[in-house]
Length: 388
Image 1: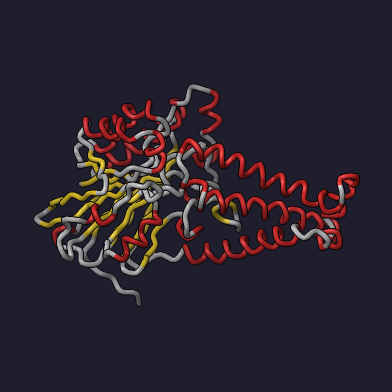
Image 2: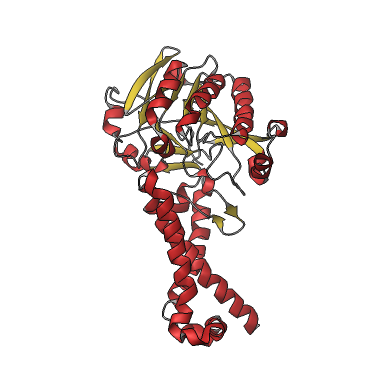
């Protein structure tokens, strides 16, 4: 039993360093300009794991290298290393808080009824060994999520409006083509009245034309609106915006449009990415009439805190990819949000504002476990439901 306890202590010790890396990376490093990001992430992880490795040696002395690790992973030895216990308790605290956060995040507003189905990607589109290797686990399929949503103050004329929400194409190769092929089929079958896209279209500027072409195919005859994500900023916006607009799609850069449908109006606002220096929510909402129903497109769900202060009805977002990798009991591993696991995916309510966080179609790097790519189909319903 003592040996098992020692191994668990060692796992928690190194797990604590993983928590430190994820916390600092999500809340600080990923906000940096793209040309610094990779270098800083690699340097951070290298430093943290170096500390994890040398802390016991530094405490016990370099002349006792093997014995240091043996003693460091025992109950009595760990008590002697001032760095070991803080890192160990940090991992334990994070696991417990994540378990509590998962239960809270699973509670959904009473207005939402979900139906979903899974569709596999077409593996015949994957001709390269690297693409076939990447399209494993949950990248081999797409979940089509449908729900009806009753938003507050919805004009009667907007009841029945069907919206397709897509996000995080991260276009860049055969896996992207296969995922977008499934998404395109699902959206065409649904015949939405409106297609809304919430950023991270491309990984590199050279993919802008092809990504815009595929986005236009997905929209078909339905009006298509989108916003810019952090990866789009890092890749370069101008080429993507021109490619989209050439194909009749509009990227909303801190601006809004009034969408008329069935004799009613809906204000569709789009704000630049939350991590960018150009984000201006007030500009996006300028022109909205008092009490007019509003859907905000914001790549990063963290924008919802400011949106709630401005009485936005519904915010659509992506960015967090459902935590990238979701482990049993532990839950989402990496959630690049100021609010952690709570903003991993799904529907949340902040005051009177609803925010739906779509897991997105792809990610970078292309690895998903326990977080299936998603296409969301929303039907607006003016009938308010009351719990109980």
